[in-house]
Length: 95
Image (cartoon, rainbow, N blue to C red):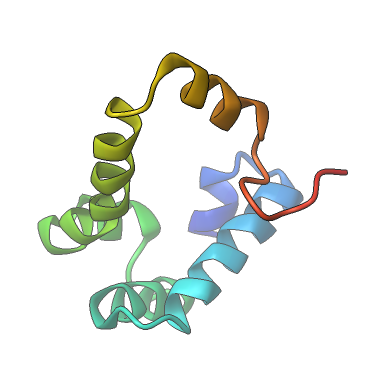
């Protein structure tokens, strides 16, 4: 079982979702995340080790911190609206 399969608890859909996310990062504009994702996809480092590394972890958390600052400034109604959009997020369709 690969590292990604282990993290996904053997669920093939979750494993594929992890691979897809890593592929997007490997093809993305952020040099550091591209390096990390490529190394994980090439089995040069485990995903667990990559996200635990200070350099990568700091870069991975930047989008969350930006979201959290924005979220804290939202009204309860705006938060409710955001939650109602579900996992697809804005601009995407739900099935």
